[in-house]
Image (cartoon, rainbow over all chains, first blue to last red; front, side):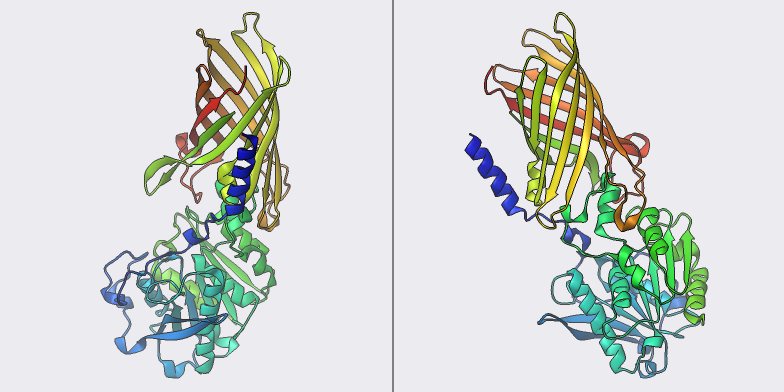
Length: 296
Length: 190
């Protein structure tokens, strides 16, 4: 009997294959094409026609992204005049953990109205394993996919000083990582909406104890610490009613740990994880984004 | 020796379910007033976390007819993961009132207890202000010839507002988490 118990314990422990990492990537790969304005599935916000973008300024194309030899063809959308990237300021939009780019299209369109329509270029990346992008979602995969987008922007003539990175939710991980540890371009400003501090904070929130994240996942996303390396100006907005990433434990931690040159906070009363721009009011949201991007 | 499963109640895709945590438990009477108890948490093991709790059940009071008593249980919960070698220790103290009835005799009990947080800081050096994770329990143990069945309702962390938490815990007035635990045990010897 005792031997059986020892074998069972050793067996269970050596299996130890259960991890929750994949739950972080709530991707949808069932689509056969991107529908953008014609998409009638779930989106996080809806925007009216006044924020529509001319078809001629919407460029959907693929890039090759190389993760240690694993090359995936990933989808991207550039909103703006590609020929002006060498002189424009560009917002690199890194989306959250759900579905695919169609879900985030209203947000991308909205950002393309910052200042005035198409004042800034907006470039959105579909991570590997999301939507029509090839591959499987992984943490490092997100980083190399976002960096592949920066490589393309650099090839078009973008320089460090005109790159603003905007990370929403899960997108705060590649946004923070590639600002703290620049690879191809050093973003000049960092914007985070409802960011994720780390899997450890998620575990602490759920358990009420200081359990390490390693008890449940292999994720190394560590925005709460990585933010300390960032000198570039930082803009943070977070819904006070975010039930997925608590403002107090995720957002406030990141904001508090930032020690760079400039930071501003927008705590949006009553907003949830997904509707900060809507609750703020789109014009107020766009004004705040524009003021931050254009401040010297 | 017993096997236990159950856990905190959560809503998953809108449906209430218990977290399916499992463990095996061993108890041995050291003398008439002290029982050793130890558990190995099998669900944790499947995540690569060695979790065990070791402790004593000390008979603090027993009525002359042995129908009613109070047991104090100091315990230590030990968790260690094989991925990054993170160790956590959580002392635990329970006080249990029990009543025996019937010929078997079956057992009804209620207890209060708490895990104690020893860490002074949370992730990213944030202040740890949750020093206790208390719980209350009511349970019943059906005693058979050799097999026992235990049903237990537990209300955990009742001081914590469970809104705006990544897991949708089920708790009265949005506080804490209520859970159901089931145990099946076999007595190896009398």
